[in-house]
Length: 77
Image (cartoon, rainbow, N blue to C red):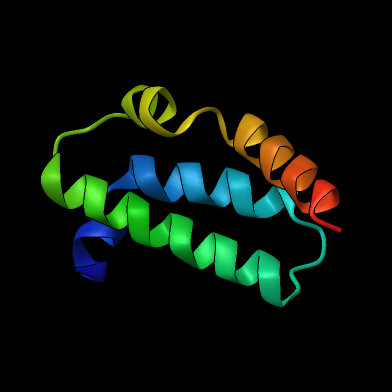
């Protein structure tokens, strides 16, 4: 499963951009990133020829995903 993800440069690029937005990764951030990586992996498995633009269409821009996660994190505190 992980092998498919690693071969898809678009998924790696998407995850790398999102991951770099997190300055400090605590337990909850790590869980979020792990879940997102799993979802990316599953999507790439089902759509092996997908592009970065397609990932953005499905998941949203990495910056938007980060901002939404942060706003949800702050409202749950």
